[in-house]
Length: 119
Image (cartoon, rainbow, N blue to C red):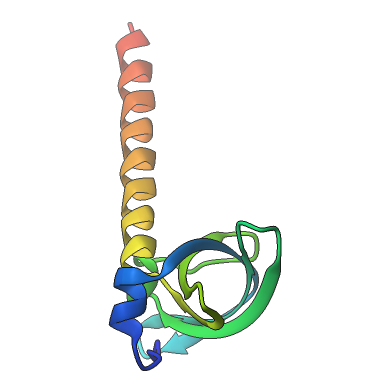
C-alpha cells in the first residue's frame, strides 16, 4: 500500500511537479491477481539532476494498471527539500484513464473503418 509521508496533502497541493521513469517494477500478487507494484523510480528534475527512490503502490493508485520499466509516472516534490518526493496518485490515475480512453477510441475507429470497407 502506498504509504504517505507526513505533509503528503500539502505536497500534492503545493509541491513542484516532475516526472519519474520506472527503472524497476515488481508485481505484488494479491488474492485476485496483481495487488500492486514495488517500484524503483528515477526522478528527473527541471535542472537536469536526478534522484532515485523506492515506492510501493496499489494498482488502484496507478490507474488500474501494472507499470513496467520505462513507464513514466508523475511525482511532486518539495522544492526546498528534494528528499520529500511522492507519487502524484491523482495525476497517475488521470493519465492512465486518458491513455485507456484514447486507446479505446482508436480501436473503435479502426474496427468501424474496417467494417465500412466490407462489401
